[in-house]
Length: 104
Image (cartoon, rainbow, N blue to C red; front, side, top):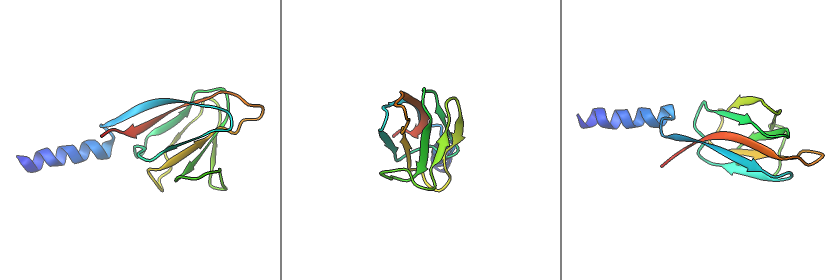
């Protein structure tokens, strides 16, 4: 019975059942880093500015960054559970997005 209980807990974590969707405001020129993004979860731009999303903890967006237009969604990059989101809008505009992260 204990093995089944442990297996159920592992499945919840893998499937993201213990994840929580967060809504984040991101100012123009800012970056937000997340280190426990749920695998296969959506990152959705619900703000007024295009955002850039890149795997890992990076200071500035590089060649691997993906532009996420207003109203668009993407699946978390497969390479890492770490994701950095940038708002480099010009002219400056309010950014906002949803992201699903693992909860302890």
